[in-house]
Structures are given as C-alpha cells and as structure tokens.
Length: 397
Image 1 (cartoon, rainbow, N blue to C red):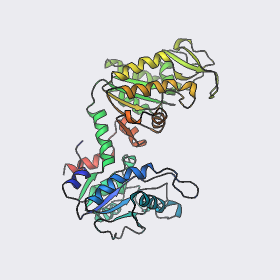
Image 2: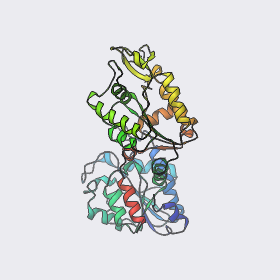
Image 3: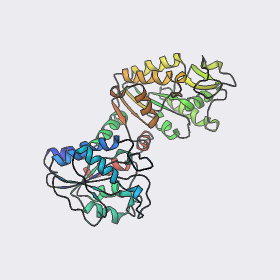
Image 4: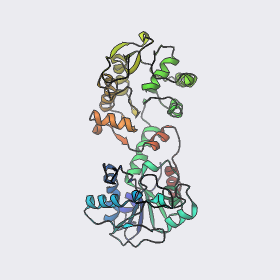
C-alpha cells in the first residue's frame, strides 16, 4: 500500500511549526463514576503525539468516546478524564478544548485535546461542510485510529479528503503494513484460522479467504457446522443447519484450488456446557446424539499444529474451543503454541483471540496483534477500508 507516513514527514522536517490534527482512538472503558479502568489505547496513542511534539508541531488530538448523541453534550461523553490521564502519562498539562470547530489556539511544541468528535453534528454521516471545517484547522492530518478505519466519518475520512496533507500515524501505518504483508503479498503457504460460535457472523470472511488461502482452519461452532456438512454427527452441538450449503461451497471452492478445510478427526465432548463438565475425547465419527463438542481433540490439534509450523503466513481470528473452561482449552492452547513456534509471519485479531494470546503468554511470539476489532474483520472479508482508500488516494495526488 502506498500512503504518506507521518513519521517520514517528521523525519524530513515537514511537520516543524505546522498545525497537526491527529485522530486517535482514545475510546477507553470507564466505570460508573467516569474513572478510566483500562488505559491501553491512551498509552498506544502516545508515540504519535510525542513524535509530533518532538518535530516541533502544534498538536491537536481528538477521538470519539462512547456513543454520544450529536449536538447534545453530556458530562459522561467528555474526554476530560482522557485528557487528564494522558497528561499524567506524558507529564505535561493537556488542555481540553470544547468549542473547537471555530478555531483552536495552539502553538508549536504545545498539545491540546479537542472534545469528543462525535458530538459534532454530521460526524457519523461524514458531512462535507463539517469535514472541510476540520481540515481548515490544520496543515497536516494524521489518522492513527485503526479501530475506526472501517468507518467513513468526518474526522476519519472527510478531513483526509480536504486537509492539505493526509498521512497515517505509526499505529495505523503498522496495521496497513501488517495487513499488506499477510494478505496482499503473503509468503506461502498461507493458513487462516477462523473460529467462533457462528458461521453466519464469519460467512463473508470464510468465502473471501477461500479464494486466497492454502488452508482454512475452522474451529468452535463454525467447525461443528463444517463437520455436519461433511456428513458427521455432531450431537446437540452448536451449529447452523441452514448454512450447510454455504459451508459445502467453501469446502468445494478450496478443493478446486488444491487447498483444504481440515475437518476435525477427534473432538472433546461433554454432556453439558459447564466448566466442571467431565470431558471425553472421542473420534469425530463416534459423537453421540447427546454430546456437545466443546474443543478439537489432541490428534486434530497435532495435525493442525504441524500445518501452522510449516506455514509462511498465518492469519488468526478466534479460539477453536471453549478455552475459558480448562478441560476444553487444550485445542486453543495447542494452536496458540504452534502460531508462536511458527517461523511464518503471523497476524492475529479479535477480542477472544487477544484473550487467548494473553492467557498463554505468547504476545511477543505473534508478529502482529491487531487491535482493530471490526476493522480487522472487514479486512479479512476482503473489503477495502475507507481509511486505507482515502490515504492511498491522497498519496497518489
């Protein structure tokens, strides 16, 4: 992907003395009293902000927070706690500017936070007049919020259209680089792990990947649906019978390309869905009518692990079993360890996937961990994200 990197603008002096508008993702969780309970996103935004300050820019940063109603300010929607926490972390005062659309007083070497951008009428609909007013506030626009990259809003897309220069901050640039490496020009074989409770939520992803990957590993309820499509009994396991034809179509599409969807040969079952339910390992052909399949078995895990260790590129979204229950966590752990041990380039994303990575302590062994959630899933679906599209267009002139 060809786009302007903010780091390059800073390195060659183009940001010095300039007004820089940074769209960050500071949408952090808060408790009932408004106190921030987890500040990872704030910490992640700091390198871009510090880069701009070190380059001698006049820095404005904004973000959305929660789900405010446009034009209707409520104290709970304010970025005030975020500005305070960011100031503590950066060891400097960061003023919060409320009515910023009419102009912002900020000088080179200073930083201000602009109040919740989703309070502006027309933000979500990418109103052109609003976007042009935002663009007029700055010399350089920096998009550094991958979590919003799949939305075309005034502060993410419109401003990038009309700003003098539109660039990608270090967080967004890293996502763009990792996605291009994994999907645009991957080292083969390319193996994708797509797991979760329902085929319906990942069907477009499965169909898109079926045209590109060499192996498509399915897990969780998705694997149950594929097992049923392959003619296996899955007992009373979670599955979507109305999507069997879609699952079969994915299998056929893969086979036509000489690729495969490996169907589990053994599974871990229980009679009830509970953490203390007795776990039974059995062949995939021996599942009883009253069984619940809650994990892949050791033979399947070993076979898939071998494929992952031989992969050139791995894309991972979703645990392959109910990993929250210890007795049904071994498949996901085996997959996680194989991803960590593989010499291939690995990119992982999705909330449950990140939880599994943290549980097994393999953060440093996964090449890139995407924090984008919905944006990451849309990339896997084969969609071009609005943020990527406009930044590439602006880079091309």
